[in-house]
Image (cartoon, rainbow over all chains, first blue to last red; front, top):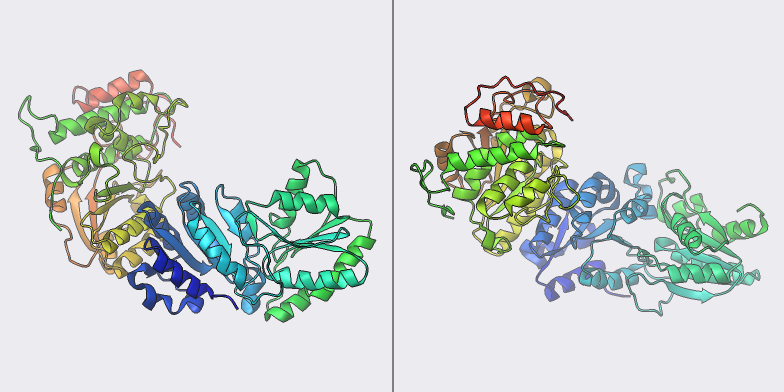
Length: 305
Length: 298
């Protein structure tokens, strides 16, 4: 098992005296940081707007603020502060959205950040990083901190299901298998289920190209184009609304490159998901590996896109 | 933390004396603001209400000069309400921060001087215009200054209408919790929102009690009296361990009777002849009552 989110942040803070960790009273995965960082840990209470504004002020002074807050409130309650104070100024504020997508589990729709990717990628200059597990999260943090750009990271501490072979780089996807039947493009917590789906599909004679996008902005266009050129159908799998997430991005890339290829979206469509514990959410919403395989096979058989 | 004014010039200069004499300087700033309202207009009411405040802060309070704009030990001033930026640019032009010729480029695509603060203009610490942002940004700056053991201070000009924004009070709570006594909020209390009097729409009074209840020290001052401002700004922090609020009582459109305290003189676009007439009012050679035909009120 790799280093935890908390230990990576702690190590980065030791290495970089300019780094601060800030939160809006969301301390669950960083309970030891207040003691370790002293005044370089700043908890502003349940004030997401002030959290982002103050982070911008700290960045003006040459600091690198790593801002940890619930994804739904960080990206939506404070949206205009992110766009105006961080986005317009292009300040290097590193925003980590806690329990994004399906990871909000049983909290209910108020806490479901399933439009966060659409919102954050809509701000010019803000990178969007979606680690598929705790290993990628640990690798993404130093890369994010080293970058001069602002970013939004979809927090994900889950243990890895796949073995990563490609070192993490901003804007680069990891291609995990290279079959030419169907390309599964995904990010974040669904990589493990997509990998299981790939194994089932392969058993059924459908070779799978599995791509872990890792960062959605900048998107690895080469990886998307290669997938569309080599596979018969592209499937986007995401715990996000259909609008503005990976499906939209893939459509934009293929149109720009003049590539006509069937793209089948597996997303939350235009609705919030059933609140429950993660395994039950996956089953209820049809995102387990077996269910994904069935959905992909049905799409392959169907003539509708 | 000691009071160290930038300039030691007297407030009332002897005839033919120092150019930094404040009333004369403020008059020139207002004149420049009126000229900026020609052809396209600007937020004239708010600019004229805080002109004296800006002139006073930049000449007698803030430890900043054109030579120290990038110095991490400078004092900071954030213009949170944003509408008053013509007064800031005019002050900058007078004090050598900005080439005065650039003011003629107001609203032109050949420059970058528009209706709200643009941080690419030297001296503008941050962009604003969306209300309720810069107290939080200033709080971050003030926190970092304290972390580094600096003695510089962070001023934020807030509009009174801006105090409707919840984010202002959020930042007030946090600044108080962090005991940021290097943070000073100056409220331009001209008693107007954009189009309506504050007390008629969303009453703010008792405003000093509100700041005090949020853990701030608070004083009220005549925002057009330089001696009073000298007194108010001469002792910071007023209470150790508390951020300070200064409520500066001002008049919207101050200086021109035709503009003063009128709800329909918020955003005004002037013809050159109207600007000329208002400049005459400013100098007291015309008593007011100027008809502004077709002022644009946004």
